[in-house]
Image: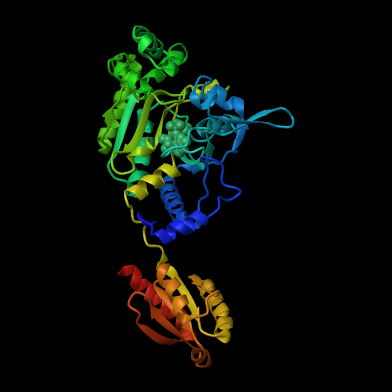
Length: 445
Ligand code: HAM
């Protein structure tokens, strides 16, 4: 939209009424014009998943709320403040899933997937729901794509493989200025010691903390490192660094992750304040984000290792690592960075008619072209040749086939190159062959 709308536009705007119904706050329609961004991401993710051998899994949008209370953690913001919970007629509490990992682990245990070849690489795509304050990159319904490696050895190579796959997805989507932050938040052995030290440190400065941090001091002290409030920022600058306190096994594991990243040529920054908001993480945690345009959306893919989640959900101790990113944040960044989507209309043809007889003939011509494998469009609602060609041009079709009275009697059709407006009459019998030839030339151009 123009930045300085004319007064005429202003007056029309005034007359517009607010519709009686709007999408719920923080939830959005994906309109036809935006579908191309979604398709692009789906295509890149599908290709990447297939290349790295991640198999698709779909789980229900509703799960028992307790899955997240136990899995994600009772004290997390996600469970305390953000979960949409519904009570069924039978009295069960179900939650609109706020994230995908707990569901994947539930499905893995439920279907005995440990019997399959390990580790199991899975990916998923689907809507998630969090009752958050809507702002840039933060919605109440958003669509995540997640990658998870479950089972097998607790090998740092898998942490690196997850980061690699997400890094490749961002690069295939042409998102630039990408940075990776990594940290290790230890295990059951070293984390309690560190948490105690952190608690002691923060207790000494308790009076300076915000209300949320005061509450979390006894319930979830690691999250204090994550607080964005100004007063708390300066306190965390001097907080003890977990990387100095990791046990030998965790330190060794983290070193392994960094060495694999070095081997892959993936640059990273160590960030000892990166803890992430969900309780199931242990050892590696990571976030990828852009420092270029669109950076205000926050983390793009984020994730980490969650070796204890299986036990928390009633299964056996099983190593696992994964991450997720939302389509909405990827699209916001791609738009902010003015990413050009690959041209799609190479195989598309626009059929134009002049007169009623031609309109009827156009219907059968379109069917012949569809059977021959072309993607075809028309504008039957417009009668004038000019108006039809205008639409074809606007939508970026490379070729138009024009049928008029004369062409029908002579069993011909006009083939028009929409980029240079050159046209030629071709016999209807030879049209499929002719289009194949021309589109092939276009792809090579
Ligand atoms: P998360 O950090 O809560 O982790 O979300 C992962 C990603 O989802 C974020 O980095 C962001 O791209 C996107 N996201 C989160 N909340 C919103 C929102 N309100 N609006 C738009 N996008 C959002 C998880 O969900 C973990 N399950 C990731 C994971 C998978 N860890 C291991 N495996």
